[in-house]
Image (tube, rainbow, N blue to C red):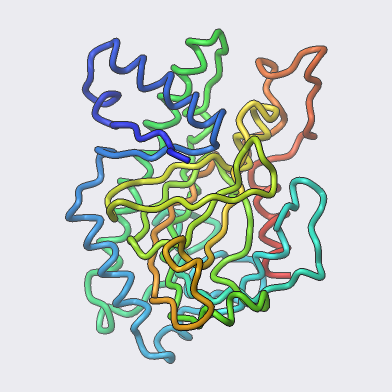
Length: 333
């Protein structure tokens, strides 16, 4: 299945007609497939390449250096280095559908590193020392801000696209405080037979918590997303290059729009090109994910614009932070 590929320049610097067409295509992509591919998004190829290089260097640090910035056993603060198996993504598989199967436990064979806003008063970031990785903090803090700029442009375009359909919403205004998270992911080499056994995977099926996720991935493959019109059916999403950005809907927008836009379930498994293999090793895989979020105190109760007699509100009044904690506690529970 082909996914819409949108050119960010058409919104950032295009004509009024080009902007309108971009916004309409964005709403179509989100409502029909839960995601779009975005090129010319505003983050330079050079910065993306640097981000991947910093990621590799971080995960290549000695174990003692990574242990010094290790994510705590509990859910908070959601910062620092997470070791393989520490997260339990299976615990939120189909959680929104109320069908999570605790018997389907699978080991997530991946490492990750999480950071938030440099000035977040609630949760401080954890960094390798300047001696170990000089310059990583400065670079990733700037990269984080660049991702937030893309996030806000996407929300602005989404507002305009919905307005074109007679729906007035304020999404950008719900991001007064930036509490989004940037995650670096490393999936070590793994035997195909071990993945096919069902006991481990690279990451289990899950949806993301926030507004949208901005994903940059290498070209190794393995990412699959659930088809919106065929629950349980997953299809491959390959990257043509590391600079192509995948933007998918998260739970917060699903709740706010009362399921008009739905969060897309996804997983990382055996790449499409390797599907016929029964043995051998899958090569290492890297990705960068910006989990964009509303401010912590924003209510996720469905907005009036998405509620009527035929579509009553499906979700209770809960803040974005409270929902984030519900799922985070399950992952680290």
